[in-house]
Image (cartoon, rainbow, N blue to C red; front, side, top):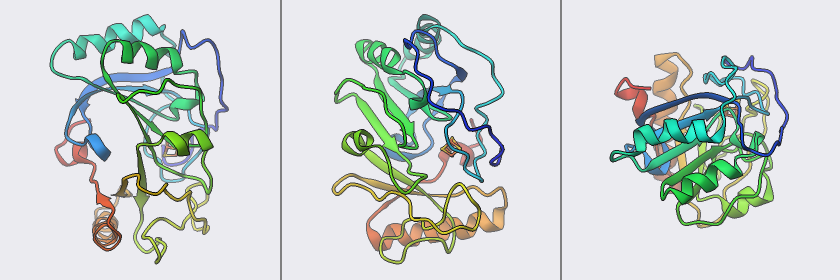
Length: 230
Ligand code: SF4
């Protein structure tokens, strides 16, 4: 989409139905569970509009019930897959509490990928992992308290010399803006931006590797793209 999505506000219903873009089985490509088989539940809509965003979360008009979502998820998790990734768009734009509770009750590992700006109350569980990829200067205090990992998208030349983290706005191309910093003692992943241009991507990857080495972050590459799967 590259930054032309509509900005959608948080819409909280009882959580028994959710706007869903797609549900599919693949490998988690990035972050703490990179390489693991996972079921992806991609929720529709986002409250931000990052100018480089290449994810489609707007083309579906699907609003299934939780039972329908769980039935599709269980088609994949009945085998060896134990990880369910709730992603978007922005998952916290909707009331995901009932879905998360049902997944945890089924003894699945749940990872939520969020931009960190919104929150709905979720149970505390060792099986619930919240990976925040800040896109704004501040994030919600509950996300800051509960995040199990921070992930930053790195563009060549646009990092803070003090910590290797982005200093460019994600909402306005070319504008300077430090993004929310990570909490102490929470793992930090750095991932090169996929600009769509192989030469630029090579520079982004090189810088990412350098900042990982220099500042002790963990380099993560979008494995699913490298191996040619979704
Ligand atoms: S927050 Fe994430 S999903 Fe939303 S526009 Fe930015 S990159 Fe895309």
